[in-house]
Amino acid sequence: VQLQASGGGLVQAGDSLRLSCAVSGRMFGLRAVGWFRLAPGKEREFVAQIRWRDGSTYYRAPVKDRFAISRDNATNAVYLQMNSLNLEDTAVYFCAADTTANAGYDYWGQGTLVTVSS
Image (cartoon, rainbow, N blue to C red):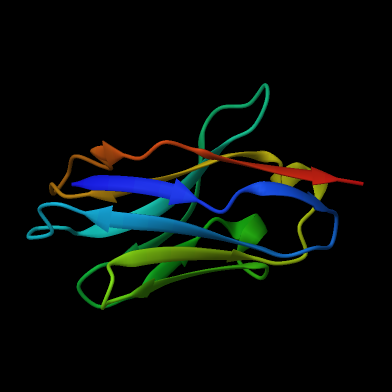
């Protein structure tokens, strides 16, 4: 499975941004696609995920009311709509694929940088 994230950029606090993740390759067995982020001086953290089979979603608590993950079944793209961005959302955002039970996310794309300014 190959993943390519895009859509990052420089925005102001309160703005919105939509990230895209192009998913390709061996789709059979794909269990979920998730978004993670790595902020300066912090460890990588989970942001949101969408299960491939039924489209159910799960979010990290601090972003649950501001972010929305979705997918386009026709193109196998996964999106992360981010609203009301704040300074703490500044990070490199990665998308990843979970293809193996009990193994976590095992395929990762390159990151896309989101910078939120005041």
